[in-house]
Length: 387
Ligand SMILES: *Cc1c(COP(=O)(O)O)cnc(C)c1O
Figure 1 (cartoon, protein in one colour):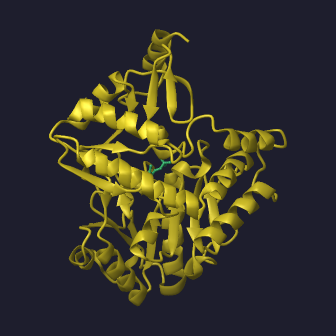
Figure 2 (figure 1 turned 60 degrees about the vertical axis):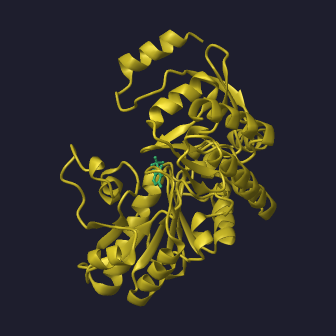
């Protein structure tokens, strides 16, 4: 593989939407990625929290390949087994009653937004459509999910945005100041991934749940990044002991294949009718087969293991000199330092460690099956770069 050719083709033919690092990824195994020059890296990014059990995982790969050998796509005019099996599994594991499948986090959130609006319009008429989201949230790149995202920097160039979103501070005072008789839902990330791995206050989430319940406002948990076992919980909101009405999931769900799901709990399980929503690729059998193999591995024992590894990782990061704070849960980790996160990420790359940034922080989303030795190696590099 010719590194320079890949980069020049990218520069010439791919839209300039990404500020890429100077690495061409070739292949990998487990937590180790190899670039075009044969240099190896410990992968603490997993393609932004996607490759949940690492690269080229045998169990996942076998499930996906055996589905490819049967049929690669079935449109949603017919029934298909992988989709139904995955929906059943997701409902049994989460307590949801129905599932809608899309292909990404943004699409899962689009479905949540549409469902919340229809639920309210069915029950209270069309004037109750506002959704409160939180400051520093991230919900996606489509026009509606950009509008839902509570960061000003996302609200330029593409006006007019979708109306009906209000951005609250993550406190009850913040919620009250955005609440009107038009509010139909509140959307949260239990851990805000993109804006710096900010864990929301559990007390706030409990009060918010009560507030929503009393007013028949739907509580939507965007678990696209913090869900699927990453935090040592199946979904991060479980740590706060709350019960959302809608949960969205994507990123790690397919273990590397594009899939998003909107989980609908009791209140709104019957809200969507035939024709209300749809997707050509949504619930693609290959993506669903991959997701089934991922979900089946998220056992109690695995989640405990993630908690243990996360505690070990975070405790040792907090001991590194110049680390100001460490945030997160399980294997979703944010590191605050005085230096620009991008600069730290570049230095880590040089030394063979792939990390992410999230606003001012360095962010780690390693595979859940990363070994203790690999964590120690990552710590060594972080210590050299930050310490
Ligand atoms: C990544 C992300 C999204 C968007 O997911 P896409 O698959 O990129 O559309 C939405 N919400 C959260 C919390 C995310 O981290």
